[in-house]
Image 1 (cartoon, rainbow, N blue to C red):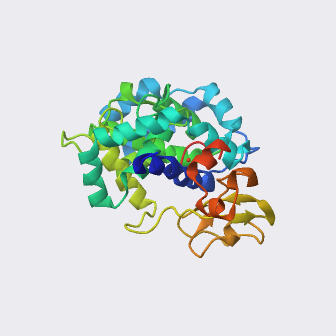
Image 2 (image 1 turned 90 degrees about the vertical axis):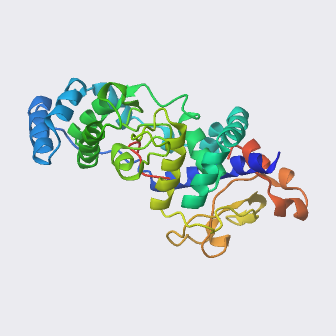
Length: 320
């Protein structure tokens, strides 16, 4: 595998680690009270009070409806029951790595521009792009406004989704997107790197110069906005983001793992993989058993290919 392919293989580990570290899987026993219609009336009044135009509210109104199916999905998420290895193994099929390499070559000039501006390598931006939507081919099938209205009314995370719903109206008001085209994930995420509306408002950039920030159709806007967003999440230009290594997992000598560099987090518990990593590194299980590790020389290399064979998302998300 060439250098680009290797980076594409390892960069998703960074994206996956960020997502897993920030996601909340706990269910709630709350109870939603009051009718959706009365809630919606108060929401529209507050949107107008915040200065959102009547035209934007009217454009969104056909989609401001309740969908019980969205609540059922939210309460029944199973993704967080998977281990890191199980989840990431499903997210790294060979076609995604191959297409990622193709996309980097296709948009090399735009990636170079974004890396110069934001300090984020092409492979990292491409990892998010591929994992979130298969490079724009699968951005979801649910209307974002309907999902957000449903989850804002529901008691579980109402305040968070109310904020996103207000910002979805602002996206319409700005002219970035029209209400009918706002199709995304069941949780309301939009675009080829699946940003929630508040993330979209704050971080999307017009990288193709057409006056709109369209993360649904403009590859240039997607690349530039992803770089800008990663900077807001704490990306530091020039700092290492991945280092290969080998550490014993919980004292079991025949298990070896590669260490992924991410920003420092909470102190690890004793015996964990991260406790064996250097300061500023968090070690995640990524590699293979002793049979794949082989000699001490091979263990030190801990190649990403071994991680993928053993079945090894950053960011705030509505999914959680």
